[in-house]
Amino acid sequence: MSHRARPSLLVLLITLLLAGCSGGGDGGEDLPAGADLLTRSAEAMAAVTTARFSLGVEGTLAGFPVQGAQAQLTREGDAAGTVTLEQGGQVNELQFVLTGGSLYLQGPTGGFQKLPAALAGSVYDPSVILDPQRGIPALLRAGTAATTEAREQVGGVDAYRVRATFPAAALGGLVPGAVADTTGQVWIGVDGSRLVQARFPLPEATATVRLSDFDAPADITPPS
Image (cartoon, rainbow, N blue to C red):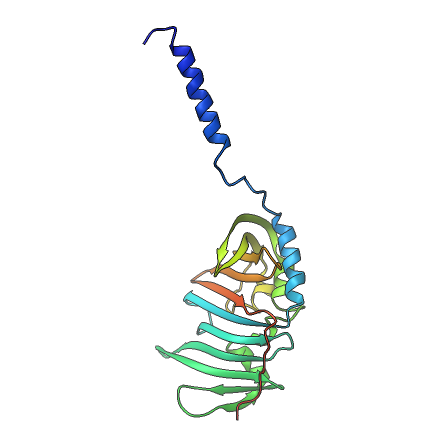
């Protein structure tokens, strides 16, 4: 190749490189500010009347035997579902109904036992989760140093993933065993701004929370 041809070839290569960099991408969507997403989600969750909730734990929560829980919740504090506990080296699943100021608990054998609702807090209290002043809305309002990391699908829902630090006082109502401020991730729906997933690394465990079926009819009554 002659020296005369090299500048033209160099120009061609640069032109192709610049064209490849400027085209064919995803448009470089600007992500909303993390703090704004937390604020909008707190407002949206404060308006939620019912939801389907699940908690999964990988590892061991300090001082709590809870390995997981699933429940239907109401903003008034009623709940019905199951909680999985490790007791004496054995894993047991308990059914519970929390309504009317009473806790109905059924172990692996036998029927439901009626107990004071206050005892739910000794295991895991789901009644505060949708409470606008103590539950998820309060947790989202308390988040600091929020950064929006990505937009992605979570369980078929388009969501923004936000990393933020949450104080132990607010997190403890959602994740038992949280005794220190924790930096975790929350996934906030693009449509509706409701919280669909949250993940919190703890000293000896990682807790993952998922929510769905917002405002679906809920008929939680004492077991017969």
